[in-house]
Length: 71
Image (cartoon, rainbow, N blue to C red; front, side, top):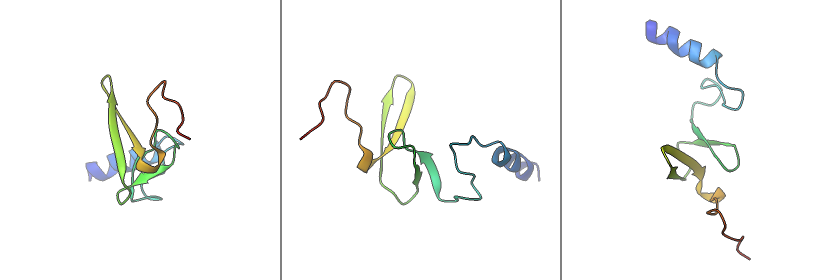
């Protein structure tokens, strides 16, 4: 019962940029590049910067800083 109440509180207080779990049950992460939700069945990539783990869609692959856009 306590777990259900805690879960409901988290859902009510979700950040606006994050879909609520009841609205998007397949949602796992938000893409750092495009800002769209990443679902469990989409390929994703991760990398680290300092102590942070970054997540993005494979199709949104960010370029390393200083690298020019490929023609």
